[in-house]
Length: 503
View 1 (cartoon, rainbow, N blue to C red):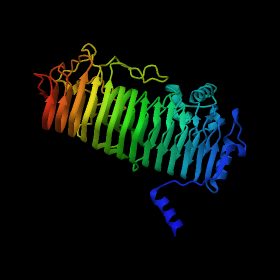
View 2: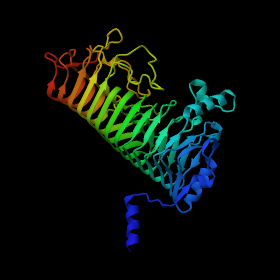
View 3: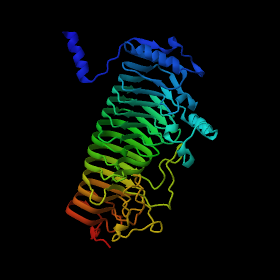
View 4: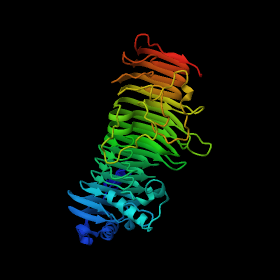
């Protein structure tokens, strides 16, 4: 009876229980060194362990491998100083670019240990380019920009798996996405380190239409988004996701929901993030393909040297009649500095330089579409320091010409997508139920624009808003704002807000 009860506890608590038997890859033909592809030997070891469940051990040393597939009940464990190197020969990854490590429709699978998985992405891409030039591979995207993601294998992919654990491992140098967890249920990631700036599209981690996921105590330095949640299938969603105690660096955004946003995002809880040297937004919440985005709670975020603090966008990139929705978002205790400089300058892969004329510093923003507002947003205990230094010679939008700001409904969602914006601190357009309290913004240099602009907002509550005494007048601009309440506005003398109408 006791044994049966113990088994039930394991099942209902969602714990992953692995058999203790170890299967060392050396016993199945693996060889150390840089001249032998161990894919067959490692796969043989995994297959043996999968019969009864067990731990496949990568011992200390260097081991080259091509794609391998994990199976149910198998833990891939890295001993200290174990380094698994991805093959730099693209043809080893099959025509469809199989991931280096994958698990499809499996359960109770894990990657653990203090070793390193190095995709050798830069060298792998060089081989891709060589094969493309020789006509041995074909890629339409390469002819326009760079080899597409299908030509560049990712390092880790778990798809349609249950009870996944990835702990302590270091993952480096992917040719595309570092790792993706698609349509999974029950994913635990802890104390992971990602260092991947080898090439473009290097998202640190992607969670795609998965449920019951925890990412904790981890570090991500990525050429693309650091932590990114996506929804790519109608009827599916990212739900019950927890992200805590993580440090992020990116030449795109730090923590992001979207861009892929077909199904939905619900019950996402994020706490204790440090985002640094990040080209785009510290926090970006984007739904542009018809997805719902609701019940999002983000707290205790520090943004050091970031291009933008907060970006919330409801767009309409999808071709059908479905519209995205954003509802019930709380961002609490966020502190960021947004310099008048490129935050990721000097990193191996930088965010793209502006393709148009230089723009003034971009504020945080909450932007929906006409008739499709962003709803029920709470910003509280926010402090953002801006570099300032805006110049009318670069761009100028008069406060009675706010309609000149483009809607750009189908544009790729990022904080610069509207071009020049008419405020320096916060820009809000097409929204309802907006509550902002204990909101403090600072300037390091003067900025001629208003601090805050609210355009087409139904239900706006401002409480304890603090703007520096040197801020330009008017400080706050309202256009077509209804149900407005204010309390404790600490704004410059004579800086009363103005209400404008369409020109």
